[in-house]
Picture 1 (cartoon, rainbow, N blue to C red):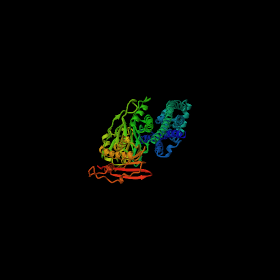
Picture 2 (picture 1 turned 120 degrees about the horizontal axis):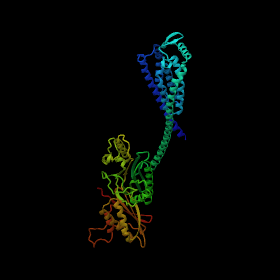
Picture 3 (picture 1 turned 30 degrees about the vertical axis):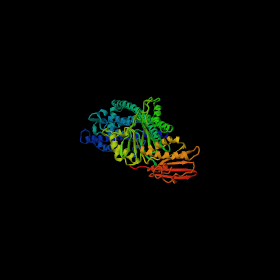
Picture 4 (picture 1 turned 60 degrees about the vertical axis):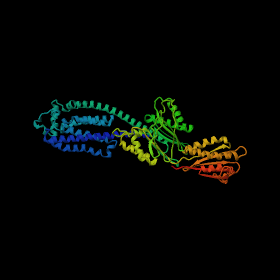
Length: 620
């Protein structure tokens, strides 16, 4: 409530100040006009008596100084004072009052100017006050003009000379006493000038001013209503701005931290709406400790409707992703169905969703009509081509397709909305895909936290002050480490489990970019170890735990079993150059394992045989 009252006060106060400045400007202009009129009298453009000219030469400079001094008021805080308007109004009225006494036949219209100028205040009471004041002072000025002002034959109904008790007097030189005596004589002769001045001069002017005052009163009343509406509009605007600011705060709060950096990756993102709130959004969130969801989307339209749909879409995607875990196509398909339902505004959403395996670098993604991202891989920046599905919210039966990409150390993906490429400059040119690609190639080696703000700055430089047409959202992801896997699986100590072991090992080795030849050789070594455990470790049913782990230079398989203690490395390597009938039985399998793998190590810990096999990567 206090804020609303303050806002009303601010609107009315601004109007008062503007009106004070307007009236002061009127005073200044009037002073300038009187200055030129004064020169007209000095250079005898207007014929008056020497006595009248002397009086004008005394009063005109004072009047001009009083009026022009209003300029000083407009440069001080006085112009903001509540009752300053009455000082300006009375100043102007009194100036007209004096002029009407001195030169009555030349100042008739200036009484009307007083009433018109007061209309600046949009205040009917002020207009009424001015009209009453003008009406009273105009009557007083007319009678004083008869006695002290320039001789007006129409006002006094005299000739060039008057006869005062037998004495002939030139009108312009008549004294106050001679004027009073002459008026008494005229009254006795039946020519009551006081009454005639009231009836013929004052009443006609009063009626004219009454008409003008009535019009101005109506204008003031109407303008006051408009001022009230302006105050209401300003109050509503402020309330909307407050609500927009609050909505923008909520929207920005929904977005993740602008910068995220871990041992696995670095992400930097920003979202700048074209209006107070926008329809773009980006997000990244952990599904579990090893999987990160990455999403960027652009809602059709702008403002509140787009922001509401953005919030709904963001909530849907996050909820569905946490439920369905790692199927991006299914997530967007389900989201699409929900957005199509009851979409009476026919709004739609473009969206790019990816799920990154932080251990393997595998990125599964689906594009729902969104601008394709740029990717930096193998020292090259290019567009990440993919199947571009239908936008969300249009056709609930559309089936989306998931694609897969393998990220390696320092690979980067740049995601953005079309507000980037469609940014305009003053020549109505677009920022465009070519400029974006060129900028990215020149700056891709910078860290995301430096690259993203730099790209935003380049867009601003290109726009050169042109108003932002669309929401601008940018997000860059850099994968910082080689794929790392630590995964264990327990198999029955049964040769029938070999296929399961091969499927397990082959799928992980493919993720780690081992070629087919290396996979076959490694599986051969794994088979030899696994079969030995199945045949010799247990007398009955048993199990073997196989763990795969890797680092930048090698992959490691660890076999653990609780069978009979046996160190296969204690046996000497067979002499493979000897003839077959001279060669000792056994030992050839483990020898082959040692030849295939780069390192083989045995331990017996806590009643378990532990055999570690290490295969180094071949550096290209």
